[in-house]
Image (cartoon, rainbow, N blue to C red; front, top):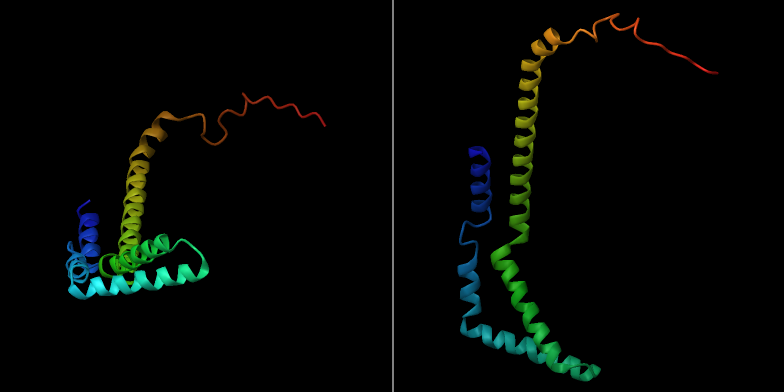
Length: 138
């Protein structure tokens, strides 16, 4: 468990730590120039939708929302950096869990063998042949 927790901590740090880019996103979002950037995006979407005869207000809202989500993804989620780090952490945890499971089953198997050997006589070579009554109808 400690090994898995350590791998998770390492993955979080590889993704940018606990803060993970929230400060950078907040700096962009609350920057004075961001208002003008979003106004430009909304205006372009509004005009494009108007020319095409679509709902201009909805198009502007969607374009601004999409731009904010794109920035959030780039600053906070960082898929190019986060995905490989998480994949390594998940692969490592899976491999460790599998190895622990196999080792546990192997230990249980080894400790059960003497009990099975002492308490099982019907599977000894030649045992039970006299009890088997086989009829084959061809």
